[in-house]
Image 1 (cartoon, rainbow, N blue to C red):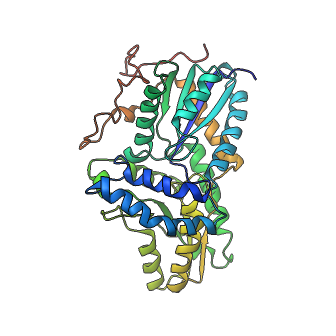
Image 2 (image 1 turned 120 degrees about the horizontal axis):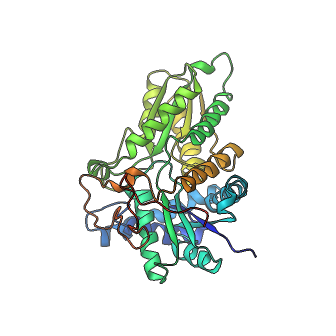
Image 3 (image 1 turned 90 degrees about the horizontal axis):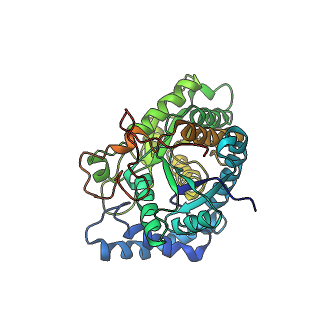
Length: 372
């Protein structure tokens, strides 16, 4: 096998591939204070995880026995590197590596595979379009920790793609899904359908510290609506809140109920923060909220398709990486700025052993030589 010149680590939360992975996944999730902070977390986290396991297993059973996110991420990675090899021959051949948080393949797996493949230039590429300390930030922190655990701290020349909420390719691909979603309505009534953008919620204490996630989600929604150019009213709400803490709202479920109460009959829900189908789309949006909509009197409840392995989205992923490699920058300018109330000493530490302060450019960012 030809050695890879550039490795691209596709970071995401992941999901249980089978029912046996559900409880370990939940135990790690509710134990992770970078994702969610609970009172008495050492005891309450495992209690919540084990209490939720039977219900969550039933949900995964209803969508085929496991999450499809690994398959979609691998398909996205294959399409991305095929395009990159054509678009950026100076950094080719490219190879992708999946790094999930709580299920295999994890960060250690990606790092060891890259080392075995002879990779020297590596890109940590978040698969969350919108940055949050609890998603992209925690994934990067875990990647840095895994590098230390595996003895690979100095094995790669790293850079980071830490956000892409308004990238033209992403917005174009999202707009395509909204158009397809609207085509599910009768043409005579299509313009009256309410477009409900839905993003994963975050605990309010994360937002109160200054996390940029809500602004980045909102910016993406606005770009999609402008590109769509349709007369439909639109709203933004948040889903998937769990546990005894306050969450960012309004909740998608509450908004659906309120739309029904005021007489709306047509709603198109759009997953704006998810790049592939998984339990939040296939179960929560499609089934759980579909039932909520039916009970609320919404006769036409539809969902826009997920991005998955749609060619236009694969084009976007490749273009995001190509632009990043060509820039020579190790991360976005915003990555350096910690939240005003940040209490995590590791979060966005630009002096970590991966992103090293090598040569300072005039704009304050070190630059990398691409294609060597």
